[in-house]
Image 1: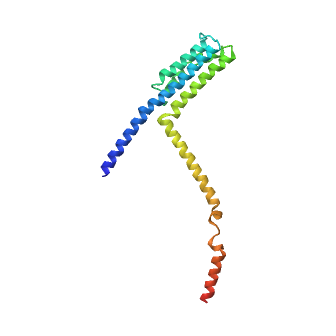
Image 2: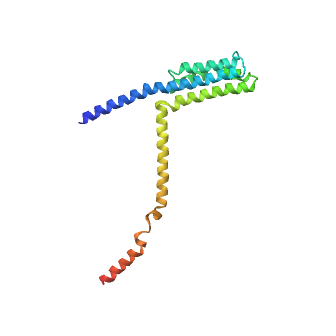
Image 3: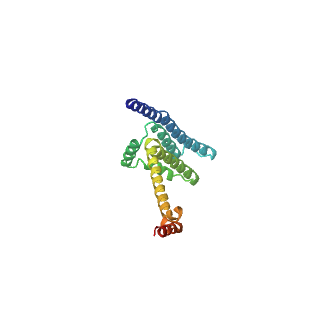
Length: 189
């Protein structure tokens, strides 16, 4: 009987892991890609609606950066993200190209929109890498557990501090118990 239960648990765990990493993992990655494409396409629409040139260097670099995020999305994970970040941090001047081209944009409205697109993409990428998937789910579960533990602790303190009111008067101060005790003492004499 125990062997059957153990085999059933392993099969269930295997099915759960398959569903988590294959179909749900692909959906999560596709959702991330769709959000990055939405940011890129809304930037394209902004340029068209306001009559800005698509040849603006800051726009070209922003669009290339968004396309690079899309290309990396298949293999993007916490370790890879950290390695890429460390590698780019060691390259002098490489990270400053986009920032410098954004600062050279004279139109404040265009610069603000390009910066917003980059900030939205960075925020979405960080959420994808750190808050979604296995690590993110475990972090969220741990956070929820800590909040639940703190809530239970707070409610326990409230319950103990109000125990007298909740429980009513104690037996030693209840007049009926004292009278019946005195009454029994008189009867026993």
